[in-house]
Length: 72
Image (cartoon, rainbow, N blue to C red; front, side, top):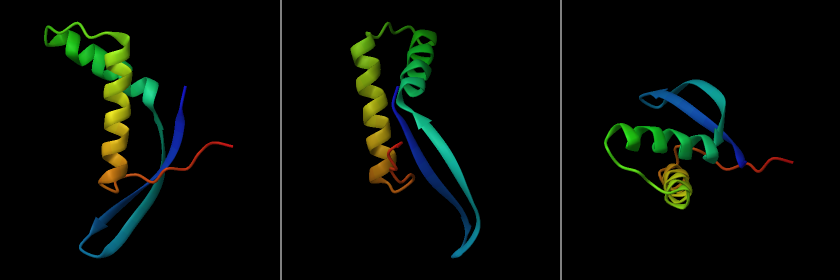
């Protein structure tokens, strides 16, 4: 299981209204994608789900939606 701490900033214009901590679990992301793809008629492999979870996490990092902080 891979946990990362993230900071989300909710903004209105340039004024920061609130900051919250969020834990993102790539295993949970993989399980979510698996369930959603099954609903749509796809049967993904476990490896495909892990790849999708990693890609999703990298996308959130790239878009600066989250910041990566490794667990100690």
